[in-house]
Image 1 (cartoon, rainbow, N blue to C red):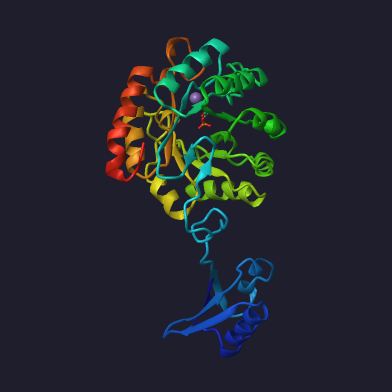
Image 2 (cartoon, protein in one colour; image 1 turned 90 degrees about the vertical axis):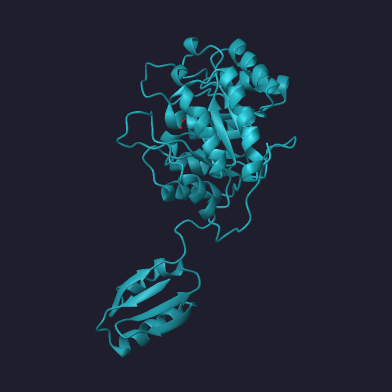
Length: 338
Ligand code: PEP
Ligand code: MN
């Protein structure tokens, strides 16, 4: 952290801060410029939260050097975190991973049918919501525990890994029983009780960016999970609210390289909720791979006209398969396997 002194700070005031920094166990590095005196304080910055040096006479401001998030940062961990879902499915490694499936688990037949199709395409992670965070309380809310059991059956049948949303902290252990990855949705990104609850489970979590949240807020939300001892966190860019009405949200593609630069955690792109338009999803998925995402999550439905949730944005199996082929062609050009 850097301490900037007022232009008229006296020598005694500067020395008092140097003494204080030393007493607090940090090492002071003084730099006397023509206009200003600066003091670099190297050590555990958290100490200064309890001992606010910026309240001392002569100090103008204190600039933290380290990021407000610690455990999620590259400063804390240089190498990429790779999350092992078992059976060779590694998220965050060189292989690009695709998560696909319907928005919601609607019935056993629908889920097993689409799971079989996706398995046939080589998809290794099946998505589907059993608990749906709907804008309207009158809209389909998901099948709840029955939906989780259907997903578990799809896993048994296909060997695919399961990702599904947990909406409520009390449900977290039950969802963890059936799912390989717990999804925290955009609306819950700052539900700190839920974040802490999944932080106490040793189960992979995919944390989606809130629709009105900054990249830093996403990383701080991840910090809540990491701080509880669960290091298996993936971050997901799913679009943010802007003034542009042409798409459901605006896909923030620059968030992908920024998250990869700032954090060691795997980064997933969700072009389905980001754009909300079937034909826009495949090109945005390709762009995500090129921009450094470790994988994509795409909503696929074989009967979108009958879907109980997000049918308008579902990609049908044939264009989805075409998207997979294009990802396969692109992968070596951007240093990925797929
Ligand atoms: C979802 O993935 O099913 C979902 C509801 O997405 P989001 O939380 O990003 O809106
Ligand atoms: Mn959806």
